[in-house]
Image: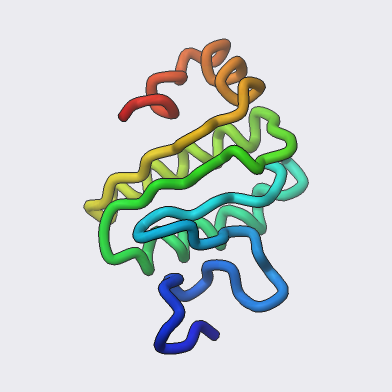
Length: 114
């Protein structure tokens, strides 16, 4: 459970689970593959991060080691959840494999919009 000095929203990077690592105010690094096998676990953790955020979020994807279409769908789902909560979610440093998949799926602007 985050302590009073812990800047992470509840559900983000709990002890033993460093999936989302705080990198600054409103910025987190994702340290997990975005693949079919991990989407269910990541979805709930990401939704908790979005719900617990005080404002807009940036999710740095530079440390994502692998991605597939299920991972791309998850990122789009998180965008919708943030929008529904009245927050803006931005992705930074998306891996080239993810950008290529998004381009092929004709959703690249959703991931690269500033």
